[in-house]
Length: 122
Length: 417
Ligand SMILES: Cc1cc2nc3c(=O)[nH]c(=O)nc-3n(C[C@H](O)[C@H](O)[C@H](O)COP(=O)(O)OP(=O)(O)OC[C@H]3O[C@@H](n4cnc5c(N)ncnc54)[C@H](O)[C@@H]3O)c2cc1C
Ligand code: SF4
Image (cartoon, rainbow over all chains, first blue to last red; front, side, top):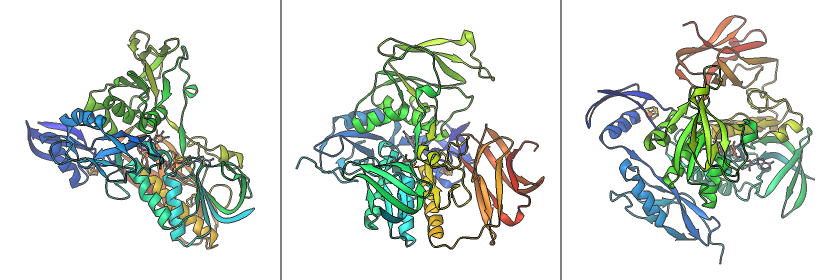
């Protein structure tokens, strides 16, 4: 089968033609670079996304700390991961890239801070 | 009054890039002014990823992207002031500011880079009939509520307009447990990038209703629902297509407008289509030594391009300050012709040296497999094949100054082939 697919890796957003059979990737056309092929293969076999959100901060100059998974996670797991993120509360100070929750998807992705926040209560 | 070589107004990605680049070019007497309490501009609230692929070749979130530059500002020891609002600029480059700490301070600049960004079109700009209950807000305001203040604005939501911020918020609200019932777009094509349609709407089964608009808002105190309808190709509402959707929140994502009160008040010539200043290929406005970059000049779809424009503005300001300008011999007007909504720069100043000039443009509608051409005196001087031209995506084409004759060039879509 051939399916139209928009590559989301970069803003160029190539409109690719992807050939596949059930869960088997066969080939791709109209991708500008090799990242498109990688994305198309993943999309057929097991689609992945980086999840971004915010968590509450205690004592920080930010009320909410922006966070992300440091690797793309399986698409079906997004809502489970969001539920786990919801439980997280951190205390300032936090540095950018600090790991807040390790192995959040049971597949090696960690939840990390995407901003720093200083403690304003001290 | 303090005399400063280069004053940069706005501490978003455009201003941050310009400040770093100018310092690296050897301009030491710089000052960056920002009205908010921190640097970073709108990026602080854009917590999603997808920034930086073009500029840093890695994928970053908005706050991470801003952080790269804020760290550089500190490392290069570039002087900046936050909580400082520029109130007005005089044509002779006197800048009047006010801040909590210092009150009213006046600076005299030798050159200025305008980098004030843009803001969203409010409801008034689109005129939807009906009541005026609470629960109507722009997508950017909702983004700030959720990502900065940690406050979820409703439970069920309809989004009018398919600009990128609206699409990003459709996903963000869905993840926060809000039911996003539909994204309605007046035009027959989406306003945002294809990748955002894919990863924000399709991933979450949120319906995108093209050629649809909100015709009425219901509710007295709080929004209780909206009536949406289909529009025909002349944008007339098709009466029997009306349907009511219950919701407590309506988000508007109907476009951005450059924040140019300061610019027009100082007498700079403005472009009616971009709502930004008219500039030449050195990003210089109609006042010598005043440059513009980023969203205040024209709305960009990617922050990476904003950064690159900030760098360029700094390079041209440096040239201006060092008096090493390519002396102008002739001014050429660049016109947006068939199928093109706008061009930037609006002028090309031909100097003694030949130059290759990049003209940025947006198309009026979607074209596939068409050539963009640049013509002067009926001769084609540049041609570029585009697989796909979309109003949501900025494109560019190159021209060589030695090929230009006459005093006007036209950028258009070649609809013949
Ligand atoms: C609400 C909103 C959300 C957005 N979300 C996204 C997104 O998710 N993804 C994306 O790619 N792009 C997004 N954009 C587009 C984004 O604006 C640009 O990519 C980029 O941030 C533009 O950079 P800039 O430096 O030109 O402007 P900005 O980031 O807007 O920075 C301008 C700065 O100038 C300051 N300023 C303005 N006037 C004055 C004054 N008089 N005195 C002192 N300081 C002043 C402002 O406070 C601000 O910090 C968004 C835009 C808006 C408005
Ligand atoms: S295929 Fe390459 S160029 Fe095209 S959208 Fe994907 S990453 Fe970008």
